[in-house]
Picture (cartoon, one colour):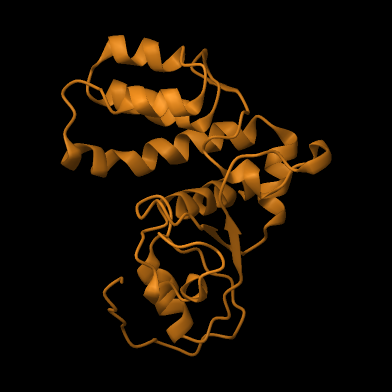
Amino acid sequence: MIPLVISEPQEPVPPGKPVHPRAVEDLIQAEFEGVALSFRFFWGHRPAAGGGVGASCLSQWLASAFTVDKRRYATAEHFMMAGKARLFGDDDALETILAAPDPGRAKALGRRVRGFDEAIWERHRYEIVVAGNLAKFAQNDRLRGFLLATGDDVLVEASPLDAVWGIGLSAGDPRATRPADWPGLNLLGFALMDVRAMLRS
């Protein structure tokens, strides 16, 4: 459970006022101030039926290639793992990650990056994921349209298996709509909301 630290609101906040949360604590504070939050859950990367764009486009693993600095990335997961290799100066790992046939393999290769330091990674991982997703959504009109159409919904990766990038709970768990009860950080959800704000500006 996320530690509950709430400060007194400085002035009344109208219910339904849009928020731009950067952490779970921001959501807890918003609820305390009377903001009615709307949650948009996602998990998994299987394309929507009929070839349409659905919540699966929010996944790091969705097959949607994009280019940054003349390098092609098959998925946002490839970009994240390549960013890890760059951060620690492992050029060999970088090339094998870029050539990985799928995001699962890219993730596995990312775990083998030489010189990895968890504390350093924690300081840089969020900005890397934001950069990758900004390129992914900016370069694909359909994906960008879906993300912008989420409005001011709180984007939540409802992965019961991931308490860092997700909330550590499934969408059907009664705690999923109570941020104070999330065991996870939902970093991917917050990164996507940052990207959404950037695409609007």
